[in-house]
Image (cartoon, rainbow, N blue to C red; front, side, top):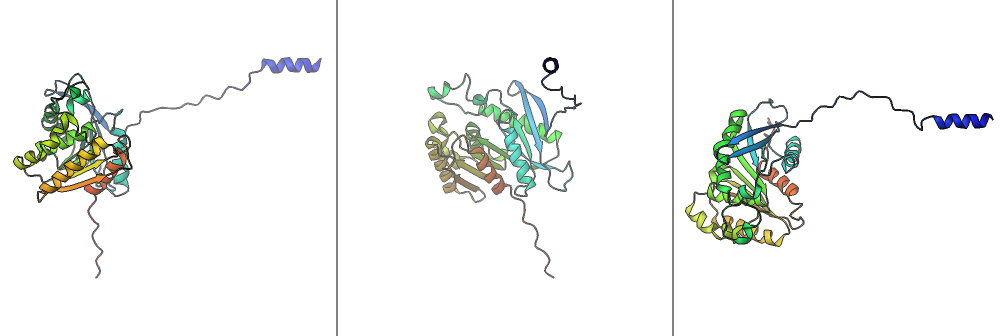
Length: 281
């Protein structure tokens, strides 16, 4: 009788005692700033993401050089490139920079030049808008960054794939826009390799290049060969002030090259100045 009563009582009890309620305050995790620009050039609103990587012991508002990046949305490449900048600055392998990411609206429109290839025109409703996107950077975004933040005169741009194509197109058409150009697995196949085919003529008639340039390519045959030929043409032109670096990375695929190539580029192009030697006296 007692056992039956005890069993009935146990069946009425909950399987687990309810956990004590914990008062948890959740706050947003912010790594930088985000704002929008109403672009008259593009006729649309563009979101901009900014990460500052001040050096150890530097004032929080110390002026920084600026690294611009297309594909710079939070759901795109901004967070992982910001992580590379942060860890590189923290480890002393890169000078402090401000990273400015431009979130896409119509990526294939903004990052491609004109094309007469019907297959190119099939990849998006609108293509061929790189000149307008460059005008947006030059005339609207860069002045906005300079007005909002304390910056130095040094600028750079990094991009992969179609963004790498835009980086190289900007290098040969308007080299003074940035000091350093980083193109990773650039999509030089665009418009039947027209940029590569026109490169010698553009270098001969355009302004002399006085930039730092880093080009990396993966194991993708349609990307590696054109990237190597583009780098070779720049090296053969060899303007005295051009600092050209080409890095084939056949161990990487198109989907894996951005991180290791950007890390190498940052260490090479943005290395801190050597520490002064100790006074031996």
